[in-house]
Each structure stands twice: as C-alpha cells, then as structure tokens.
Length: 273
View 1 (cartoon, rainbow, N blue to C red):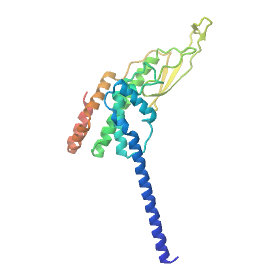
View 2 (view 1 turned 90 degrees about the vertical axis):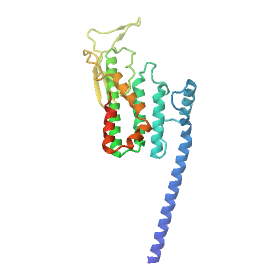
View 3 (view 1 turned 90 degrees about the horizontal axis):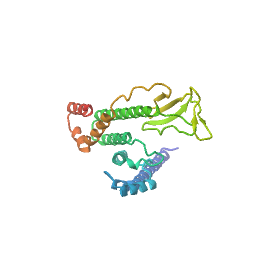
C-alpha cells in the first residue's frame, strides 16, 4: 500500500470515528432529555404532601417507578436521589403499601431516607474530596448504627414468637433481608381448633441476616438477653438534627472554610449529642 493510500485509509478511519462519537453523543443527549422529561413531574412534589397529593404521587410512581435506574448525568442523578429520599423522609406513607403490614415501624425507615438524602447532598456539595469522604463515612456509620439498633429491637420482639401450625414468622424489620426458622417441634392442631404442644417441645431458632450480611441467631428457648446497644430516641434525634442542619447553605458555608477550620467544623457537626 502506497503512502497516499495509507493516508486516505487513516483519514477515513478518523472520519468514521468522529461520526461514531458524534452519533453516540447525540444519542446520549437524547436519552438524557427523555429522562428529564419523564422525571420532571416528580419535582412538583416536595415537603409534607396532602392525602390528595400522596394519591397523585403514587399514581405517578406506578406509571414511572422511582426505583428504576434512569440514564442521566451523575450530578442530576444525585439531585434526583436527594429530592426523592427527602420526599420519602417527609412522607413515609408513600413507601408503606402492601406487602408491609399495618404495624410496621416506619421510624427507622424514615431516618434511613434522611441519611440517603444527606449522602446525596454531600456528594453534590463543592467540597474537597477528603472532606466529602469524611462526611459520607460519618453518615454511613449512622446507617450502620440504625440497622444494628433495628435488628436488636426486632430480636427482642421475636423472643415472644411461638411457632404454630399456621403461624408465620414476624414481619422483618428495617435492615433485615432474610429470616428463617429451624429446630422447632411441631405443634398439634386438634379437631376443636386448639393447639397442643408436646411436653418439653422446643420453639426453635430464628436465623436473621441483616443488610450488611451479618448473621444473627435467635434461640427462642434461651433466656432473654440485654436490650439494645444504644438509646433509639437519641439516635433518631441525632439523625433528625443532621437532616435539618446539613442543608445546601450549610454545605456551601463549609466549602468556603479553610482546611483546618473545615475539618474541625465537620468533627463538631458529627460529635454533637
């Protein structure tokens, strides 16, 4: 192949490559535009919604699921997450439809949504990478504590669980991804509808797995253990304080501080009781 032909092939390759990049860029921008149009109606809902607004939001969610992954630039995705998580935080009723039971404890879920909204806000903030990572680690630790606390409360509840012929395990609480029962003796359902247990029957063992893949074994026949590791009320109050305090304006203020002062402010923010 002559030099002239090689130059021609090279130029054609560059043209094809540029055309491919141009097509890919336009297709991506078109996809982003479709996503923006699809999600725009959700931004009309904020704060505490009225029952009628909640109804309309639920109808919108069914037509365009909010938990689906949509193609959008990273910053817009974070803005979307911050908005939706804050909305669920202020309106937990939006999440608690069947199969959740009426007695589901929504309080830990509410704080979980708060933490997810705060993480998205922090990722959006114009902060140095080190400060941003430090704040996110603090928030993730709060979510771990929230899960641990919820699991401990649930274990206290299931200690009162008595397996029966038709009885199911208690509804899993926040932070629990699986539960199973083993090693229990079968109760006998008599003709009159009463339940009779064999003498010395074992209630069995409940195996729980939490969101962090920690396994918990609850022996229903063992004596009750100590209560929760920390006070639930104080943990909830700490998360609520952060949600109200760590606004976009506060994050902007932190970003304007010097390195040493900002580090001290972040430590103070997460060490307040």
